Image (cartoon, rainbow, N blue to C red; front, top):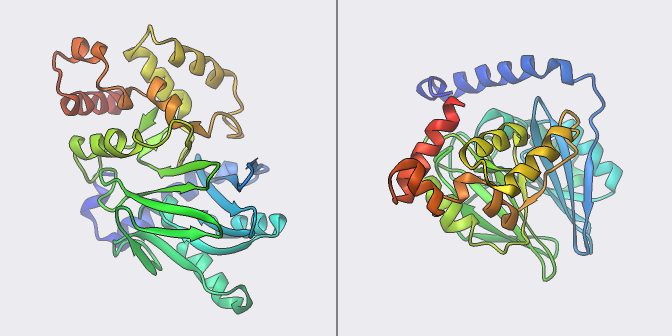
Length: 301
C-alpha cells in the first residue's frame, strides 16, 4: 500500500480495485447475510462486502431516513434499502481507499438514473481523492439522519482525511470508525504519525461514552486478538474475546462486531498505552512511543 501512495491517484485506485476484485472473487458466489441491530431509535445493518469489508446502513426508526457508510458494493446496498423500506439520502465516506469509497460513483449514478429517489449527499473529509464528494466535513461538523445526530471526528493517520462518524440519539450511540479503530486493533499509519493515531484513539474515540457501539470497516478480530494476547497474556478480557473469535462465524462475518468503546478500552492494546504493563514492555512511559512500537510489532505479526 505504501508503494501505491507514490503513484497517481487514478492509477493506484485502479490497481487497488483490481486487487480486491480478484482476492474476493471466491466470496462473490456465497450468500451475503446481513446482520441487523434494531434499537429503540436507530437500526444499524451490517452488510459484508468484498473479502472482509463491512458496509453499514444506518436508519432513523422514527422517520425511516437512512445513510450508508462506505458502500463499496452499491447494488447490494440498494437491495438492503429496498428490503428495509427506508429512504436513503446520505453517503458517509470514512476515507478515500477504493474498498471504502470505490462505490461512491456507482451509487451516485444510480441516483441520477432514478431522480424520484431525490438527491444523494456524499459526506467525507476534504480530499480530492474521494469520488463524488458533495459535503466536505471536518472535526465537530454535524448533520442529521432523520432524528439522529451525527458528529464528525477527524482522525487522520491511516489516511490524512479519515473521518469517523459518531451517531447518537437521547437513548443510543454508535460510532463508525472505518480503518482507524478495529475490534481489538487499529489501522496502519499509511499517511500519518503515531501521535495522530494516539489523538484519534485516546483523545477522541476513548472520550466517547463507554456504551457507544463501535462499527469498524473490516473483520480483523481474530488476528488482532491473537496479537493482543501476545502483548498482554494475562489480560482475561482479551483471552475471553479470543476464545469467542476462534469459535465465531467470522467467515460469514456475523459475530463480534459491533464492539463498544468500553470493551475496546479493555481488549485493545492500542487503546491501553497508558497501562503500566506497557512501560515495562517497551522501557518508556511515553504513550506515543508505545503506540509507535505497538504498531511496528503488529505490522510484523
